[in-house]
Length: 87
Image (cartoon, rainbow, N blue to C red):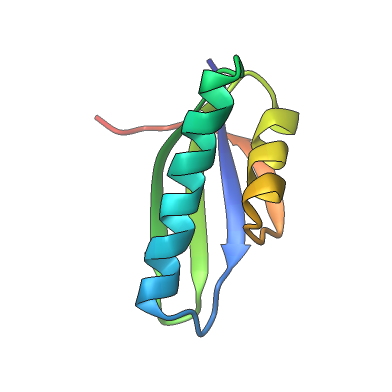
């Protein structure tokens, strides 16, 4: 299944808000899977010095990833196809 990277600018976000955003992504992915959409939150990487955040999702389509983020109210600046190179 394809992997998509969601790019976010979260400069100035509080750590508790960052944790809440991650929980929202995980929860919405579970809700969408229960409704029949194949999607999975993989992980996020956050750079606190400049607020860049990259979140990886496994999904059938970019539209599914966009829907998850829109429905969860999570801001993003872009969604691109990615390769997860975790060993």
